Image (cartoon, rainbow over all chains, first blue to last red; front, side):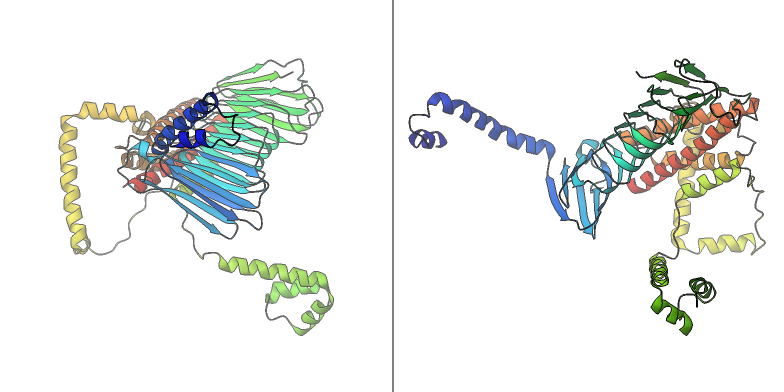
Amino acid sequence: MCLQMMEITPSRPGTWTKRNILPLLGAGLFLWSAAPARGAGTGQSVEKQFKITGRPVVVIHNVANGRIEVKSWKNSEVDVVGTQSSNKVGFDIEQVGDRIDVTATILDPAAQPLELEADLQLTVPEETELQLKTETGLIYVEQVMGDMKLESYAGDVHLKEVSGYIIVKTTGGSLVCAQCAGKLDFSSIGGNAQILQPQLNNVNLMTTTGNILFDGDFVRTGLYSMKSGKGLVEVRFSSTDSFDLKAQTATGTVDNQASAFLKPDSHGGVKHMASKFTHGLFGTVGMGLAKVELSSYSGTIRIMRRD
Amino acid sequence: MQCKDIEFVLEQEGLEPLPDDARAHLTECRNCRNYIADLTSLVDAARKLPSEITPPDRVWISLRAQLEAEGIIRTPAEIVPAESASWWESISAFFRNRIVATAMVGILIAAAAVFQIRSDRITPSLEARKSLGTPPAHALEEVPSGEFAGTAQALNDQEPVATGMILASTSPVDASLRDNLKKVNEFIADCERHLKEQPQDELTREYLSAAYQQKAELLSAMIERGRSMN
């Protein structure tokens, strides 16, 4: 019927031919046939928007399996899109003043893991405070400039261009923090931490068995502490950086690949010495303006220049 | 009256009612008015806070681990129960509640059944415990005697309860929790061994303290998940 209508009443007679129409119809039919299948695969979705007058606080507790994605926009609104794989998961979304609470709850405890998938996609004003808690599935936050506390058992946390006081706590999930600014606290048992091109002035990283990579500049007067129980702690600094370094390990090793840039001591005041129970390395790069403390119980500490 | 007098009056008599001379000063002094306004809003906010919040178990365990690590507290002596009614009166009072009595009988039957099964299959059971990492070698054989003894004991007591609550679960989250518990236990055992050889090693002590805190939080998470599932 559609075909007949289009052939009989073209918008510009003479320009519409079967050669033009058929590919469009083919694509249309393909999308039409694919749409219900996609819907069945992803289940229901819910979307809500909330007007905000001040600086919003978004609290998410996702007990289902799924991804939480938060991005920002210029609008004074919080947009929440929840997608669930089945009706065995439900979303409670409510606004209390400038606080938005989103909770994904399991409605049927006997449901199979595949039926308990719930993804959340949020778009928030740039200056939004976040408190996200999930069990598994990725937490992804991009271009949000507010304090945030992100907790996950098994899921990874990826942050891009975020700033503020950032607290990340995982059990086994890893953190990737690219172009982050402000203050960062990360603690984990098995998770790794990768800090790439940061503008962070206060960093505390602690993992029991994971690895740590810090690749970027140390802000002058910044404080940096990176500890791994059994993993590798690797720092790649730039030649223009300025920091005092203290690296210690109980039973591991210190791999100094930047000895040409590390001066023995900086300020002539306190003389640093490793305890007789640890292997240590103390030195200064540049003026020694930032303070960098690296430690590992039994892993390797690697110090190298990036450029 | 001067601004410093206002502070003194507030310290001594509180916000309300202010004496006449203090109020007279306030009509002229903008700074003091702002100061009083700030204080009033703080007091109002404080009144809205709940009077009592029960913190989760992990807070107490972490606190205890930290205090023990800093040598502020030591492992407490065993508590001697206060003398009270006779043992028979206590038992009969306990069993007066029929629901409790029924539950107790059920638990006894279940315990007897478990004991029977365990005695039949003692070797596989131990293998299963090892594979779960609960409780680990250090918990079964060598409970540390140092400043972490109390924490280690408390956590080792809690560990079978926590792992038992998610024992039947096959979800990836619970598998991850069990896996990470195993990692922490291995790390704790490693640090304990090292500290026995080098008791003055402060770096290892710091790592051990942090590992106990992580274990406490992990067990608490397991218990919370177990409760939400059951």
